[in-house]
Length: 149
Image (cartoon, rainbow, N blue to C red; front, side, top):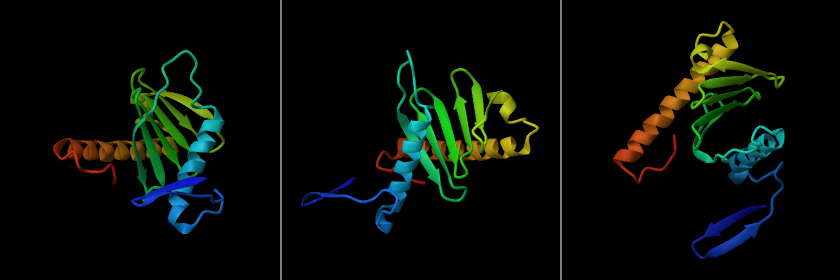
């Protein structure tokens, strides 16, 4: 169910998540992605402070989405299901391939991987981090700027 608020009040509409109207397609895709990630168990945290999404960016050119979490973890998910998770506090990086196999790296070594696929995804991740930092700088200069790229 998607709730829509307008100046003259609130209206509630029900739409099938798998067949939303064109105007809600991007939101439906985002909801499906978040749902699948929550169901995957990657967000299960035991005995630790639960992190929340501080910033996020969706790059339509590379069809990726980056989440910058409050605990300084960066998660990047590519359309084909590949993911990169960077835990900046522990300086660890994880690469999840299309089969769901997880490989651990140090953050420094992920940028020097011999695996061409890992190296390319790491470069795309760094480009997204640079974009998100540019937006953050612009927002600090002018707080009225919305978090869009």
